Length: 94
Length: 259
Image (cartoon, each protein chain N blue to C red):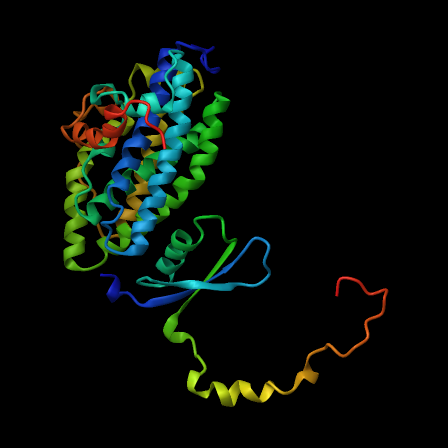
C-alpha cells in the first residue's frame, strides 16, 4: 500500500534552531497526511516546533555528475572566506 | 455527596468513575498496540503506536489516582495487570477486536469523540486532580480525533471497497455507543457533586461532532440501538478476556517482574 503513496521530504525546525532542516522522507497520500505522518515519525522525541513537507518530485536537485563543474571552481578561491581580516580586540563572539 | 471532590480513601463512587475512565484508555491503548508491526504502512504503524502510548499514559495517571482513592494499596500496575475481566469497567466498545484498519479507525473515531467531550467536561471538574489529568489528556485526544476523523473521511469517501468496509464497521460497532451516555448511580452522584460532566449534556454534543464527520465521509449514521452492553459494570463481550490474557501474561507468570 505504501508503494502507492508518493514520497515527501520532511523539514523540521527545532526548538532552538532558526531554520528548517531536512530530516528524512516518508510516504503519504497527500500533503495533509504527510504533515501528520511527519509529526508521528519525526517529532516523537520533541524534535520540532514546526514542520515543512514537500513532494520529493517537486525538489529540483543538482546533478552529481556535474559536481566538478559546479563546485570545483570555488576550491582555489580561499580569499572568499572572511579569514584575512584582523579582528579588533573589542569585538567578541564573532 | 458534596464532599466527594477530594480523593478520600474508600469513596466508592469516585473510585468507580476514575477506574472506568482509566480502563477505557488502557483497553483501547492495548488494542492499538496490537497493530504495531501489522499496520498498512510504516507511517501508520508509528501513528497508531503514538496513539496507544498516549492512551496508556492516560491510563497510568487515572489508575494511579483510582488506587489512591480506593486506599487498599493497589497501584497502577496492580490494577492493570492483576484484575480479571469482570473487574474491568471499560466501555464495551474499547475492547472490540481490531478487525481491518477501517474497523479500528471507526472504533477509534467513536471513542475519540467521546473522550473529547468527557475530558472537556472534566476540565471544569471540582476534583482538581481529574481536571489536571483532563488538561493533559485533551491535547492528546484532539490529535487522536484529527487522526481518526481524517482517516474516516478518506476511507468513507474513498473507493467503493473502503466505503463499504467502514460503513459495515460503523453498523457493527454503533450498538456499543449507547453505553457511553447511559448514566447510572455513579455518574449521577459525581455529576451532582460537580466532579463529572452530565452525560445528558455530552450526548447531543458528541452526536453533532460525529454527524459532522460522517457527513464528510459520506457515511450513513446507523439507527439507535437499545442499551444492552454493560462493560462499565464489568459485564464484557468474550473479547476482553482474550485480550487481557495476552496483556497480563508476563505479570501473571512472573509476578513483580520488572525491566
